[in-house]
Length: 289
Ligand code: NDP
Image (tube, rainbow, N blue to C red; front, side):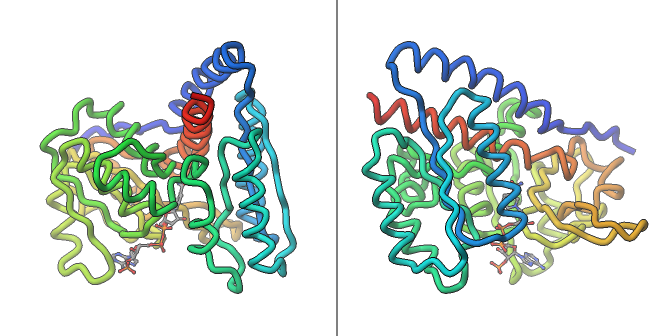
């Protein structure tokens, strides 16, 4: 039986945001410029509305300007593109985030491609994805960045470790694999067509669940002592009939096997907004020179 350490993403993110607040104050004092983050929300998806509210609140708490654009669900794609172009041209806006998912009639790739890569604080533009892939300075997607920060805080150097990332989305799995490669891990990306997924997972010193399937990764898929990062956020019915959040990893089974694990909630989730704020300051620094 391994003693499993909980990786407290909430506490880490709080410390990060406090440090960031000081860095923002120093930047404002030095340049006279307040970093601005513009968030575009199209439609009324309740989960997205909660994220956008939290982002706005934490942006202000960090001493940055928060600019919110809430558009009705039936907004034409051309109108969303026109708004993004206006934000690209606005000197008070240093970061632009278009909340996903977008309504079905809007081509998300077309919208992401319209964001100025220098203001692309989500790191989803192909220019930033490409720069990350070839090892150039880039704005890096926030959730993967948060995962790697937690891993380095837990393990120190990641060099030479076997990392298995389950999930290959452009938002989480692929950029996370790139970041782990940059840390000199030996990286495997698994997905829905992977053969013997439990066997592949058992090889991992670092096991990442980024799938979106409640508790799919079982305790006996985990190598004893491995570090487990659970990106999944899944709402399931609780015993009391109320909804509760679980990750992609069967947390109760993983305890006693994993060396360290992120809880859901309170693990990776809080890191995402903290990294978004950090990216906004980085983008502002580069734009102001
Ligand atoms: P996507 O749906 O875009 O991607 C899911 C990935 O999981 C795909 O690559 C898919 O494979 C793979 N997959 C699906 N089923 C299986 C299976 N049975 N076995 C192996 N692989 C499988 O999801 P996201 O990457 O956007 O998100 C993943 C999870 O992370 C979600 O729960 C989401 O809510 C959460 N999330 C959390 C964030 C945070 O802030 N903490 C931020 C972003 C996401 P294939 O490509 O073959 O279809």
